[in-house]
Image (tube, rainbow, N blue to C red; front, side, top):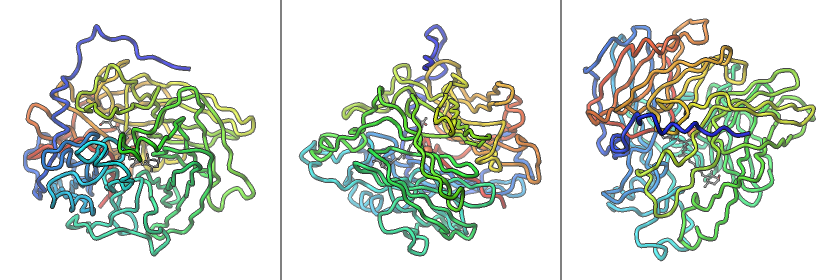
Length: 486
Ligand code: 3ON
Ligand code: FE
């Protein structure tokens, strides 16, 4: 079952490509200042630290990266205290970041699009890819960790954001072992995360960490075939992974003709496999179950929960994986030609081993978030970055809220010159209502080539921003982040 976006050619575009491209300029400088250019007021009861990660460099000394996901991780931190806000950003000082900074040129192949200059001859048989730390940042067990799904976390100093080295959790994580960028915190206070070790068959490892940041369990499972799994969902009893229908042919990569990412091909006639793994200490003697469905490509899930013998999973799904051709430029993306990410619901019937799925909303959206207390439980509201107009594929320029109970949505839009990303939901202290809190998001404003920290009332997006904190500079479009209350 597929839903094509309506052909909305008649509508004027809500953006220009030139404005959008401004958010993909590198930010080379590291700042440290109190934000004093503020519209509106920072709520006095908003207290804590917003952390964001994302590619800070989109070029190395003028040599352009060929995919934004290849950019070195830069942490941005906004600390809210007594109605004021402090900003600081700092690069994660990975080995590759330091080496390329010193050399002033690209020294490594990136996973997604970037090759060393000099054509295939410069890249052939170089199977080493650049390890970066650009996807997420969390504060857990008194440790500040920058995450990237293909390698071990980087440990940072929470005060100065200085890079201290890699984190191995007392040796439970081995050298070069991955730790994904999409950990989940369950309602009992455990952090659950996974690692993918790809190959002809793939190993999925699941970790559980207590609040002290110790790994309390680690279990591994083999699944057939190659996996590109960026995110997962948890419920009370299960961890669930979507094995997207892709094939990997490593030969062009080995020959220096394509990056590893370009060797991953979407297989539209293959099913998506849904891998359901019982959580540690749960449901004894139960085996891993694999269900099949027809779907597209999924990076991010919203949430999942159990209902009798069923599991319900909400995800952002694309008709196909957007492939980046070796000589194309992501800055020239033709949004009309790519399929949008849309909100889908999957109903897994475990007794019948059947999956039903349908589209919930045709608004292009990404970076879904929910109230942290509802992870793995039934829930009503989700939020995310979204396109300004319905039914078209376009850059994220808005923040949307979807009410799963009523099937209605609310929108706050920064169009025509603003561009959004992931919002973070921050519950109001001691609140009991699911949408009683704030959404905090970074908005790139092309008019001033700078970014704003925007605070919205999650209960009522339409009433407009509570506060807009104008930074002194822009922040390149980022990936994920987290909020640690005071
Ligand atoms: O899966 C295999 C194992 C593995 C871990 C092979 C592999 C080489 C693909 C791999 C590595 C995967 C990595 C390094 C993935 C990194 C992903 C990343 C940095 C970001 C993903 C972002 C996803 C989305 C949907 C971003 C959306 C952005 C916008 C809407 C624009 O603002
Ligand atoms: Fe992600």
